[in-house]
Length: 220
Image 1: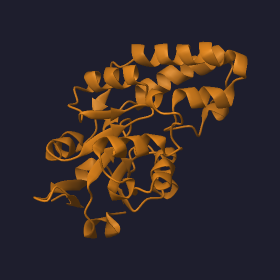
Image 2 (image 1 turned 120 degrees about the vertical axis):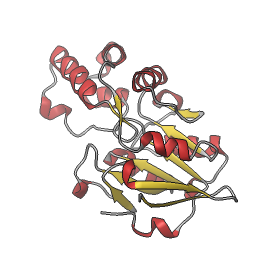
Image 3 (image 1 turned 60 degrees about the vertical axis):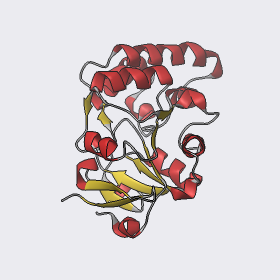
């Protein structure tokens, strides 16, 4: 565990995942998907392994085509209605504050309405650029969210550092050509493949340079 060779590099931008990286929404997510699964006859085993993917993609993998629209509407409803105990994860506020004048973004598997609801519930001050699952043709593990975030930031994907907690998101970042920093807030370290792995954002300092680039170092 550690930042590895990331400390030797500089980046033009940092792109954060949201759930499990900046905020802890796990209890709310579990409640919503458990209710949804019971209602739709989906077992816990069938539901497992989809962390970090857009809800529409999960539904499409679990249910037949004719049930997709209603099932997607239902999980969206359940998740938006349940944001009571969502909190900011360690180091998230400090990371975003350090990058306030630098290029940074959020790329999440949430829809725009759900992302806004969770950000508000956590009282998080987000970057100005927010890429959501309903803004791209293909969500994580496809690279589309990170490619769009890089384009909106005006930088090349290979000059971006992605911060993620989920294998699907790390796969998406790799496919986009980005460097990857993983946090082990939701997934065991041995299931994460990244250029650096830390416990959470509290273990990292983001250091903007005068030339506009960003470096990372262990938190002191």
